[in-house]
Image (cartoon, rainbow, N blue to C red; front, side, top):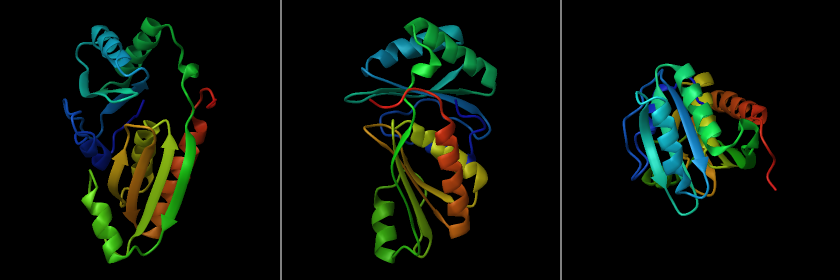
Length: 202
């Protein structure tokens, strides 16, 4: 569960193509789940909303392999109860989730004009500017990109959240700004991902 959605990340949650529901607001809390096979996500949302019909679904998405659900609200305890109802309904426990595994990370200083332009053509959030430091981070499962982006914004709110790719085979985060902010964000991302409990990738 993501607690205290940050302004840029909350705004981003309304952007994934074909996945738009009720928009989340900064300061709310969010429960985001990814399951396989993809159509299992219909059972997941059924369990969540029958537990608490007042929660708002922001994303319901089925792609080739995975289904993704994002629901949000003002009360984190209600979201936790919905999460437990999902686990109970599927006969699962939280420790059965896959832990995040980092595939690649890089800090690119003083990005060139042309580099910024081509990044911005593919963005879903704000723009990277020439001369800034660019942070790129890739991990699996893809959904952990949401945790990375929201936590990075908490410690470095001056960074620009350029893009978050949270659906698919791998998750990716692009953030840009000054180097000190990037360093703080990178440390926070590495720390929170290492703290996630679950099973290792087989």
